[in-house]
Amino acid sequence: MQLSAAYNNFHEYVHDLSLAQKERLAFIDFNLQFFGKVSRNDLINRFKTGLAASTRDFAAYKEIAKTNMELNHSTKQYLRTNKFEPLFVFSAEAILQSVSKGFSDGITAKIQPSSTCFEAVQLIHPNVHIIASLMRAIHNQLTCKVKYVSISSGESTREITPHALINNGHRWHVRAYDKKSESFRDFVCTRFTQVTLTDEKANKLSLPESDTQFNRLVSLVLMVHPDIKHSQAIEMDYAMQQGEKLMQVRAALAAYVLRYWQVDCSYEHRILNQGCQLALKNHEVLAMIESPQLAPGFVKKK
Image (tube, rainbow, N blue to C red):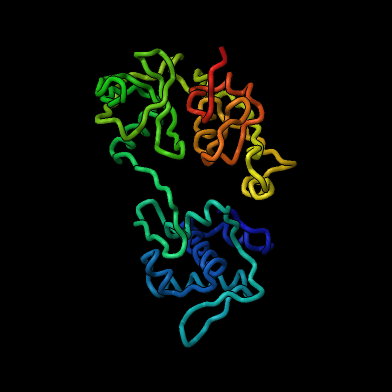
């Protein structure tokens, strides 16, 4: 959430406000911009404030942006005017997430799904206590003793030193140094049955800066799949420039991106009629990334 440059005195005005009041002003601004209306009851129901506090918030907003809204006395709602200029700048991602899940006033707020904006794909979220333990280990650079269920060997006990949580589009992973394999690996967070922090601090080998694949950036050059007849549609979907999309990603995460976006990584782009709308142009990058076998169409050169 960034402040807009539309009002010269806005930045000075909000400097002395509490974070809570800034959030409430942003809520008013958000509703006016995207829903066209907002009421005192909306503010009270969202933030559990009283009528007097709500009135002060609307007065403060009105003082900053005098022409942004007008009160409809019959409905007791403030309506967006044609002269509306947003006070806050929201990213497209933040907008769609806020609309689909409800504008959040804090991490303890319950999700209030929208009836008009949906996320078709949703992750299965790990147990909160597991995430809490992993986050404490990451924050304090501590080693954990964990019980983990893998597809190949079932449940086993391991010692790992985690340093990052990763959403790969399908599920949450934790990136961690694994003592057993003496390497950095990705562990699926929903597969932990137990995570216990130890007093052992991360050593030089297990520190984040030692994770070469995680710290190395590689370039993915994506193009419209040759099988697509009207390439302009795909170029617009991915904001391509001159028919290409250049992405800078971590080498440890590149294969996840290629799989999630269904990028045809076969050398002659042979994947047809299977949903691949993108193709990888610079195949040489596959030799530089972790787990290239996850990329659609990947074949190891002999």
